[in-house]
Every structure is written in structure tokens, then in C-alpha cells.
Length: 170
Length: 463
Image (tube, rainbow over all chains, first blue to last red; front, side, top):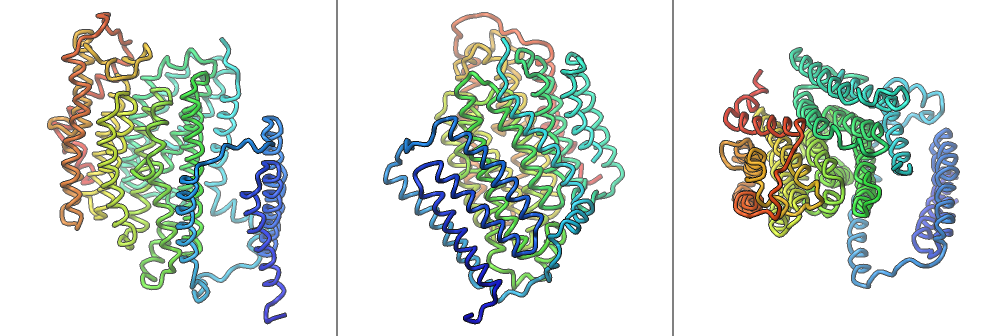
């Protein structure tokens, strides 16, 4: 098919979908729709992980992001009753400035990624690196310290959330 | 490394204090723990070895030990200052735990050897601070500070991660030493997106030190947060973030300095000009100190800009961090006591020389040190930084720095003038409890001691 392999076709389609859904997140007015499009974006990214043979990451991505975090988002939006187009409109000037600055960043990034096809891979990819067995081995050998210290990060986030949420006892 | 483990353990211990009812004992335990961490840290200096831990994830070399020493010293002072600040709130132990966790992140930032530990260090340091900034729950300004800090900080983290991803794409490694080897071997054929990654990381880290175009959050957050949390942010967080930038850019990206130095020079110039002129217009002391911290960030970045890998630049940045941390902790300690009645403007200092001459003298010396006037530590700090820039093409920054320092002296003197020449409305003597007095006097003594004998600190890397 036009000289492309099936993987390349899949990559192209999934990339197109993920970019389109990501744009829809920003462009829809209704916050609920935004969140739903974000869920679709996450599914597309999970499909990318599958293409890279990282099944574990794909499953975790869907379970954590599309499952847990997005449900939380939806709850917050519903509880705070934000599902109206009550977003205050920005002035034209600030929209223009934001557009120019964001566009410049886009130009820089696109320019940076242009011409990368010719670059030789510095390391040949290990095709089974994303499987649970290999992931576990890497996590508990080379990345043991980050893996353990992350518990401090999660703990402090937990303590912080409780502290902010707790009612002050007078 | 042992210091890091002790502080992590202390944070977890602090959370148990509520259940096992040793809340009264918590402060002494924490202070003893910090002393123990400091001592063990010092012993590692004596071994003269760069030991790296966990597959080169983190390594306590001399630079890391010196920075951790400054951070632990400031933390020690901070906990004494804060001894009864949290008693009123119902979440005393949570505050302790969060500050200790932030400290863990700060220590990690001094010693990281890998991009993963850099990212985790920044997050572990920042997340407790977002919460602490918002910890005065009924105060709208504090809520705003926490929220602003969280949103802006998350954006900066996004930039950092994007930068790390691009650099990983080019080098195929997270390890900073391997990255440096890769850069040296492939200096001519690095892909363009590698440089973009370097610039994105620079943006993220400059946000954390609040250098000029990324400084907009700093005055609002510093003003809105409780005064002691502001003290924490402007000393420990700043020192740790500088340790991170210094390590990453001098060691990791030192050999491709032409990519980032010209941008950094402009950022320093902007920091010096914007910060000093805005500070001169403030009447709120906390806001003024926030702008002053931005200008100090500009000075400290000069050492990184000079990019000379000798002891001179190590000495300069360690000396500056120490002088700045002690001066700030003293100034914030006094501000905390003076502004108890709720007035944070310069007028709160009116007539302090009559109400409490000793504290007025300490504040004067702290202001002199921050302004960089001789016999205080700040003078030599600036002097050492300037010496690193001689011999680089950025001598024009020196002239700019001297001019803006003169502007700086103007607003530091506003407080001194208020203390000595203005009359206060009520002549009630300012009573400061002994613990706070102890910290203020000891830090003033240190400002003078390392100002008069700078070689104590400035030559530690010879040993």
C-alpha cells in the first residue's frame, strides 16, 4: 500500500486521531466535552504504546489516566457545576499575544524535529523492553532509587491534600 | 546520602507524632535529626571520595555536600524560628512533615546524577511548597499564592519533562556523565532538537529560581504565603535550584556552553534591571524581598554563565548561596516578628531603633549584607561572583550589575531609614521570644564572621 508497511499506516492513523482529539479538547466550549475528548486522546496514546510493544504501559495508561484521573475531572466539573459556557472571554489583544508566543514555540519545535530522519539511532532499540518482566528488572535494578523515592513524593502529595482539605478546628 | 535518609525518616516520624502523642517532643527531635544529618554530611566530606549510590543515580561529591550543608544549616535556623508558629493550627505535624519532605527534595537536587532524580527532586521539593504556600486557609491571598504557584510550577515541570525527553532522544541516556561523554564525542553532529531540549530545561530551572522573564509568579506567591514559608522559599528552594542548575549546566552541558550562554546573559541582565527597579517601587516588605531575591538570582546565575570549571566558581557560588541564605533568614525572621500585627509595609519598621535597638541593628546588618556593603558577607559574595566573570566576554554585565546594585542599596536603605529616623505611632517595645532572638543574633554574627574572614568559606574546596 503506497510503499508503507502496515505499522506505518497504523502509526499515521493513530497520530492523526490523537492530534485531532487533542485539538478538540482545546477548541470545544463545553468542559464535559473537553474531558471526553481528553479520554479519547489518552486512548490514542495508549495505542501508540501498544505499537511500541509496551503493553504494560498501555494498560496502566488507560487504567490510571483514562480511568481514574478523568473520572475525577468529570466529578469535579459536575460537582462545581462548571458545564456551562461561563468561561470569561479574553480580550483580542491577549489572544493575539498568546497565539504569537505559542506559535513561536511551535515553530521552534517543528524546526528542531525537522531533518531528524537522517540521524542514525545511537542505540538500537530493544524490542521487548516494554514487557512487564523487563520493566520490572529495570525498575528494581538501575532505577531502584527513583522507584523508592517516589514514595516520598506520593506521601507528600497525600499529606498536602489532606491538609488543604481538612477543616480548621477552632 | 545518610543525611538524605535521615531527613526522609524524620518526615515519616513527624507524621506519627499525632498518633503516638509526642507532639511536644517533635521539634527537639527534628532539630537533633538535622544536626545529625549535618554531622554525617560533614563526615562524608572528610572521606574525600565521590561516592555514587544506586547505579549512579545520586552522588555526594564535594559540591553536593557543601550545598547540602548550607541547606541543612538554613533548615536548622528555620525550624527554630518556626518553633511555635504552627501551634495554633490544627495540622502541626502535617506542616512539619511537608517541610521535611521539601527538604528531602532540596537535598536530592544538590546531588543528582541522573535526569530522573533531577525531576523527582524538583517535584518532591515543589509539591509540599504548593500546599504550604496555601496553608493560611482563611486568607484569600494565601489561597491565590498556592494556586498560582501550583499552576505555574506544573507548566515549568512540563517544560522540564519535554526537555528531558528531547535530550534522551538525542543521547539515549538519562545519566549526566554519559550524556556529557556523548556530547564530547558527537560535538559536531548533535541533532537540532538536542539544543531545543537544553533550552527547555533551562527555562524550567530558571522558573524555579525565578529569573527575570519567568519571575511573574514570585512577588505574588512570596507576598501571599505566610512569612515563614516565604523565608523557606527564598532560602532553601533557591539554593537547591541553583545547585541543580550549576550541576546540570556546568557539568552536563558545560562543553556546549555557546548554546545557552548568550540567552543566559540576557536573562541575567533582565533579572538585574527588572528586579531592582521594581523592588524600589514596592512598599510591602515581603514583595520587596521577593524582587530582591530575583536580583540575587541574577547574580548567582553569573557564576553559571562564566562556566569556568575551577575552584573559583565553586567557591563563588557556595559563598554567595551561604551569604544570601543567612542574610535572608535573618531578614525574614525579623520581618516575621515585626509584622505580627498584620502590617507588612515598610512603615511597620518605623521607630524600631527605639523599640528594640538590638533587632534594629541586626536588620541593618542583614540589609547591608543583601545590598553588598563591605564588612558584611554580601560584599565578598558579590566580589567573588564578579571575579568569575573577568576573562569572559560578558564584562558588560559587571557594569550593569554595579549600577543596579546602587539602585538596590536605595530600597534596602528605605528600611534602615524607617527604623532609625521615622517615629512609630505606638512606642510599645517589640518583644521577641528568645528562640527567635537566638536565630537572628546567630545569623547576624555569621554575616559578620564570614564577611570579615571570607577565607573560612571561600577556600573550603582547597581542603
